[in-house]
Length: 302
Image (cartoon, rainbow, N blue to C red; front, side, top):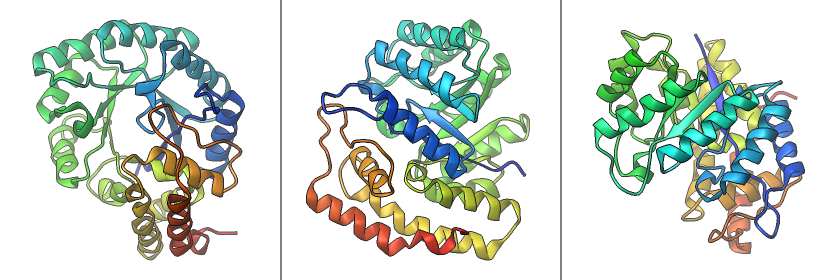
């Protein structure tokens, strides 16, 4: 059984909203030492949508030189236009990227024929492994199983899919449609709480933002899953269920995740790209209460 928990990494910024390269290294070290299977750089938690092309290229350079030699790295190169996506994807490949993940164009719904051309042209241009990133709450439309099958059949370097949909039935339908023909195609859930169901349904695991805070918890979940320890899985799932309340502290979870990481000792600041604001004192207290109630240390070996 292939079991993976990848972290969609937050992006560390300074008070002026510029990249804090040393703090980003601190984050990569924290996650790698914590035992997750891989890092997704410039996903939604990484505020990719607010980064300039220059900043995104800086993160490509940093992630490839500092993290990729030690762990699997997926680089988010999806942009709102094909031209920008091709520019960033080519740049990442030139720098040595092995895996790219592409959010589909957002703001307006995009017809399936346009999506087929969008992903197809990128897959034909670079030789990197490509993961599709489905997030209909943000794009306004779905990357359907039918479209996914067309893309896999035509482009062998399209190797995986992140399904950021809370309803596990959606991911199950994708698994059912794809896995019978393409058993090695990797399908991840985008919500932490769906990891176990994803694995049981034949998927590869999850890419969930809570692992920014507690990488050891999710590394332990991987171990318990690989050892078929149902009791251990159940205990960890109860912790995850409590921690999911972190997503409800604010309308946008990114500054909340950053503040929680600081509470765990990560040397970084909690600034985000404008217009996102840092967590308020009330929110900080809520975060602390949630973390205390979850008592993660109870299930992490010393």
